[in-house]
Length: 209
Image (cartoon, rainbow, N blue to C red):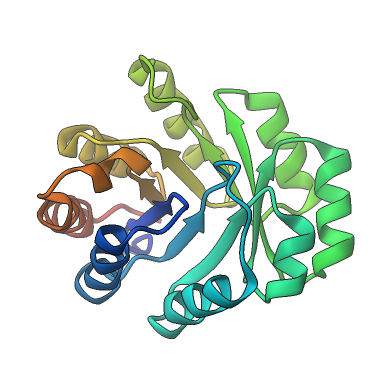
């Protein structure tokens, strides 16, 4: 029997501060779509230890990895599963030294191939592709990058800020390992239904290993 890759899964981004609405949405999402990872985003809001501890415990208790964006020291203090940082070798080295070999350290590469290869060779646990802003995206360039990466490398890839289900399906077929909807998905009252729809769509696609 031909081997298949693991199913593509959702990777959620959570902005701070955590409002009551977002808190309820996250709880529902953790139960209903079982994301692989939740990234607590760096929006300039300081992490307060007690609420952060409770949030991290809830995410990890649901079986998802919990990462901080850019917060290397905070990740070490709070006991998250790791961090996502910019694709910079020096920064990666500092994160690995601070967090240890068992930490999950992902790198944000935009559409940059060289940086992705360099950091993957250095030991990054995943590479994140796609635009970090909410502005116009070059989906064709992202698709080509995902197809190239999945053909050559075994280090997992994440496609960031994908809001369209058809685009999520296309990227999954090309070999991406995780789909990360934008933070703005939580602004909609239909956020959970939208996540369910995307999760079902990418979860039913099988790819040859």
